[in-house]
Image 1 (cartoon, rainbow, N blue to C red):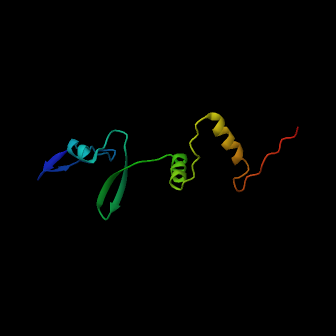
Image 2: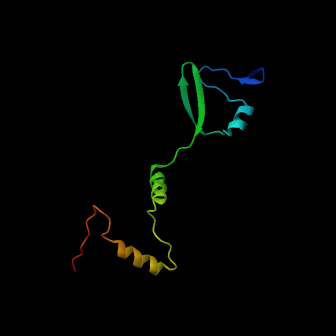
Image 3: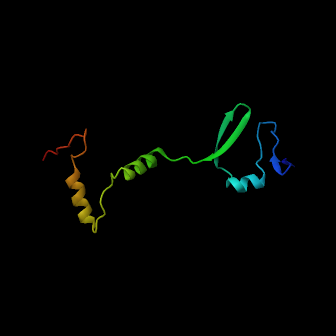
Length: 101
């Protein structure tokens, strides 16, 4: 249960070391059920900071976009396929597959 002293919300540590954030704190920090909080300890002070977790592949894709490593926009599927074929074998470290007929 939260107690108020000098209008600063206080919380109680429960038996399983759980705390309930008061409504006023949750609203100010925009925290919802399921959000991830980083717990940082400095001396005897505990700070909880809302964090976002991003998928590793999405992070790599965003880095590619920021670095300008994106494909151009195409008007037609044919145009896109033509561009993809022109890019085959251009990636460093990749071997080109030669099909036997």
